[in-house]
Length: 470
Ligand SMILES: Nc1nc2c(c(=O)[nH]1)N[C@H]1C(S)=C(S)[C@@H](COP(=O)(O)O)O[C@H]1N2
Ligand SMILES: [Mo]
Image (tube, rainbow, N blue to C red; front, side):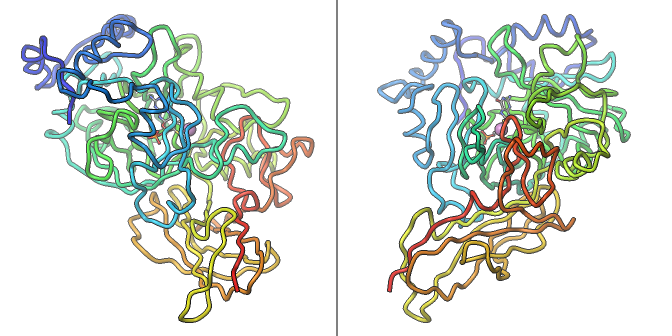
């Protein structure tokens, strides 16, 4: 499975097999990180050539489509609708994937800011910075020195549903398909931090940065609150029991169970325990996605930068903003409660089943790191609602629940909606507001239109129109 280059492999793997402690200041580290072993990033002709060579070494170079092309994604991820092959941005094409507990890897969306790097796992190291001390973690360390844990997690891009915003907003025009549910396996971050005597008290932050940026470009990085890190975050190297694919972060990513996709940093390269979020000049190359992007920003406003916040539930932040109780625009962390009907699908025609003349409506519902309390289904365009029942695995709140509703369907055309309620009592609203309404956040039973089309859980745009046959 692992890609290996032939030259220099033996000398280097011996060295990375054991943990090395180093004392580096930040500036030296930044300089050193320019010359990373094992990383090749698109944009560099040398890197591309090396990649091609290593592929032909393995006999994979012969004839297969090239990375960064639609053909490549079509071959490896046939269930996706492609918006961009380079960087890879693609969502599940069919509703039906939202009837299964596990999302097949061919149908799990991909969202990248840069083309996926090709990384040799044996050479990869994560730099963990703790004050003056810097520790290198190899993949061997992660697998052999720390516990192995698995967690179910519904990965969803914060822009999922963006195409339903009117007026439209810039970005990948995701409909419903930028979400998937899988099992992630790796080492608990809490254990790693404790093993290095890190200060893990509440109020601290963990900065996590990827290694996917071409030289000189912005670094994809997030600041994760220490409470969440210590609670359940993993450094994960397997998705549904297989090594991560290049597109999903091979060889290792930060997994933040139940939180929006943007928090789950792929190709994890740097970790740093901090007193605050990334802010200021020192973090200029890192802070864009933390402070400017991935915020809920109403029309005409701009995101301010903050040192720290203390509410991480995205909906709770939005509600507090709406009530004038929040002095900052919400950061996108924990997911908002949401559901989607998987069957019947978009504009479909169905026949009632022979045994009792009903149609089984199937779907999934999730609420980030909170539990989904109930799901209701409407088969008359939102006039009346009936309770659906849960079935299938319940592997903790990070993973979604499957639901079903037995519909006594009459012939004709019907509009179906689903809406979920979580343990905090938050329930999905029907429409997305228009920007002119100037909604700060969730109120008037509408989901607030926001500049980047984030966190959309309005149920009306997620409805399906179904024709039932005689
Ligand atoms: N290093 C890095 N990590 C990243 C990204 C990225 O571009 N670079 N994209 C993020 C976003 S916006 C999302 S939604 C998820 C997508 O994860 P997936 O492609 O495995 O579904 O990865 C996140 N982690
Ligand atoms: Mo995303």
